[in-house]
Length: 172
Image (cartoon, rainbow, N blue to C red; front, side, top):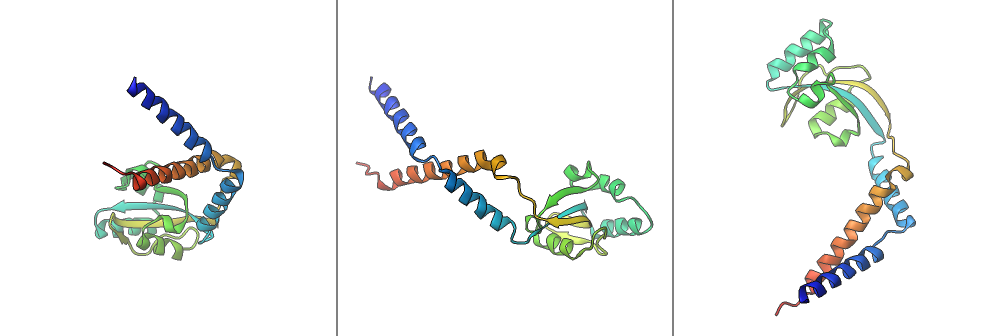
């Protein structure tokens, strides 16, 4: 009986916390605006391709092959990054700060269609990078991301509530 009583009380507490922690539309809008402002700090997104190899010499050979007319997409199939290798080295659209600093620095110096003249070293290996395009940062409409924002805000509040309970608990 005691276990059943505790289960019922926990269920009621959980429902009460969920109800009280539900974010308002204004809070969802504020979180969206905050995310948008942070994400647009650079203001640009880059569509890039890369080929990742273990050694600098391998990367230099790839650059030479590209200069002689080799197809980037074909050469990318040998990339150590198997995820992008299947797509011709395509990394899709991303802000420069989503990459490690050496990669990001090299990427932002390129012009559209340009390939790095020298291999770029990161902790992952040696990269040959091609910039396909640049655009202003794109954002999904608020309506599309509202459920994720609501869930994230609610989880933060529930976590804060639980932390408050733990902090104020007196164990005898």
